[in-house]
Image (cartoon, rainbow, N blue to C red; front, side, top):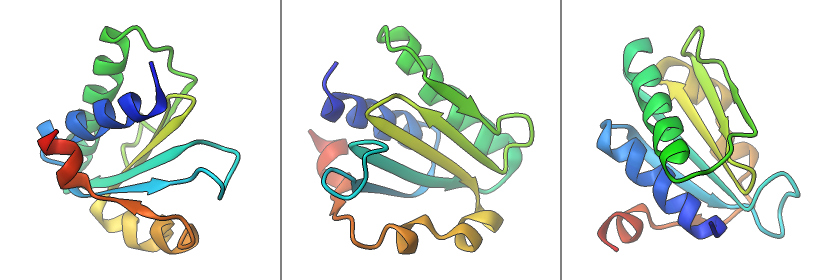
Length: 118
């Protein structure tokens, strides 16, 4: 599966679990870690876990291997590594503290609405 397809899968999965403020960063040319970051948050640990599990489950159904899944035990910041796409699911109280959007501010953002409407 191409990186853009993985990005679409992750954004749709997060949106289906009512993730808040879904942001996508194009990391190509900015970082060697991944092609894209997806950043979103939930309003409770339960919602954070539900979002993360939905992304994980859809990736598994699509035949993708998860490189890494971290943080699900506490559901404050869950990282889902799909190789080319890394999904960060935060608890709303922790998202501003870590502020990945500012940390990676030189990465262009992609329009989430375009992804969801495609």
